[in-house]
Image (cartoon, rainbow, N blue to C red; front, top):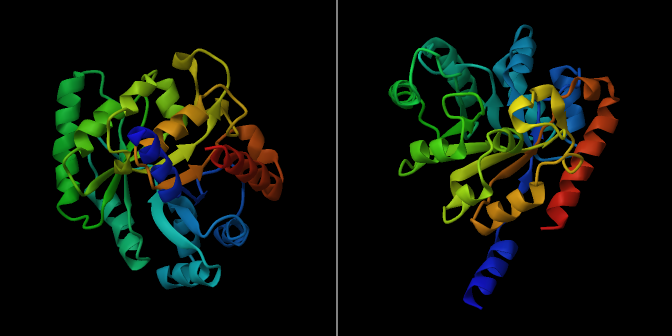
Length: 274
């Protein structure tokens, strides 16, 4: 009875906010995408490439004005810079400077692929050393992406890095979680408020090891047990952001409005059944 009440409390108490992501296949300029995004969310994950393109003719202050005039709150900048055996501090400093000017609350960290000449233990050790260098100058909380086929390729490994460090949170991508072949039970008995972002997407019905990014599908249209994952997250105390984000070449040919409608409709349907 106590467990049932606790779960009901969490269901009522925790609200999963849906966020627009600029990491998508639709071909719009920064301004065009902002104009579309405002109809779907009050939060946005910005794309570094589109910001830099905009900054070729405008200032960071102009970026801030565009966001504010469309009532959008930026949460994080999505980028491709990685930490691994190599670490380019200049790239991260540039992203951090833009983040500070826009008052963005979180900083994304992508793990690089594991070098073939290093064991997993050594690769993680090198990653942690370079992550520590980043933490020396990034003053906002960082969000570590868990990426299959990278140094941090499972939730278990991401959890070990983040656990006990109040400055490190996690980004769980349902496609990567599924392709990593980790059991759902890895989410049990953990404080899942440590996960700050969940990138929600589905996958084609092919063997997990052979899954490629181009085989992503709209949430609910594939084989990933999204409802089970969301229930685990809810019951584990997750109160972060749901980011529907699907990269599939065919979707890039859709009308942007149609793409957004389908993406957010499928996401809201899943969340309404929690």
